[in-house]
Amino acid sequence: MTYDKTLFNESTVNVLVSRLASTRAERESLYKHFHQHPELSMQEVETSARIAAELDARQIPYSRVGKTGIVAVIQNGIGPVVALRGDIDALPMKETSGKDYASQATQLDEATGAEVPTAHACGHDFHTVCLLGALDAFHTQRDQWSGTLVGVFQPGEETASGAKDMVAHDIASAMPVPDVYLGQHVLGTLPGGAVGTRVGPVLSSAFSVKVGLTGKGSHGSMPELGVDPVVVAASIIVRLQTIVAREVAASETAVVTVGAIHAGTKSNIIPDSAELLINTRAYSSATSSHLKEAIERIVRAECVAARCPVEPTFTYYDEYPLTNNDAQATERVRGAFDSYFGDASMDLAPVPASEDFSIIPDALGAPYSYWGVGGFANPETAPGNHNPAFAPDLQPTLDRGSEALIVAACAWLSSGEGAE
Image (cartoon, rainbow, N blue to C red; front, top):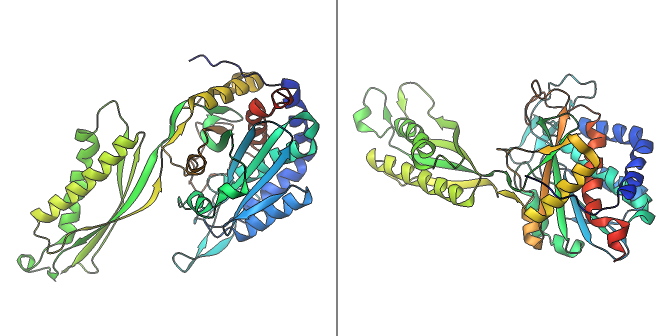
């Protein structure tokens, strides 16, 4: 596909990006701070406080949205409104990257009441500092551009709760309606320092469902007196594999994963209940809806076949919408990337991971575009996101992430367009 170059002022971009050289040491130190002090989803209290302190130090105005969300707004005359998003939460896992600044942190998980190790094993610490770097560049060089720049520091991406929380706490009142909403994610699948995007589906939709099965307990020596929910669960697991293999068209992509099964306490006791945790991925809303219908149909049918005394239960959670890049906005971003990054600007294959990124722009009625930033010198050996060893190369990743935000925003916020 051929992408038209956008009409943005390259000299403006160069001046704004030049700011990164003078702030590099400060940003690297700040990144290491966030990396060593990760916080779980919707518990990012200290992270949010440090972001606020950094904005205060630069006299960038901001509002708090919900408990830990922050929206910074830089108004600079007449022109478009561009919003840039960075997620700020971490994961409940122990880091094994071997970095000298690796996380040793633990945190009380409010959801489970357990103290757990925490780590930025998905790169949200990069997203946070890259957004702060971009805001600093625009704020300190206002003579180079015109319009309004918004920085959205979003909590709770890992649990699909943060974007919904910011919408519920009226993010619309904290910022003007954006002409475009932009975001990025550091990845191990792109070459180090590369930026990649695509028009259309870029991240899959997803949902998880907890399935509760009720059987009838009995002694292991007298199975005829019970209804074994473990056998029911096993039949369901096997049958679920036919959804993708026999119900989804070959031209579509779908994933159904049974990630956990919980049942029983002893080898000679047939339990009276079992629980399945199921996760799905799809690149279209229709396919996602079909997966939901098929899972419920198969589970119900197996329960009937096994004479389960009670209907199964379905509890849905971690529901992520499809991230479907707007064509016009993405072609404009790609044109800016091609102009500035040259061969380091490339196509991004659809990513099977999922995001709550699109919830806020959809609620605001704004088009959006989302891209990836290569975080490792060698993608062949790079650990995947959520791997305990996932800790991208400090540079050029940190600079490239801020550069990408600046370059993309300048496709709208150049001094030339703002003056029209």
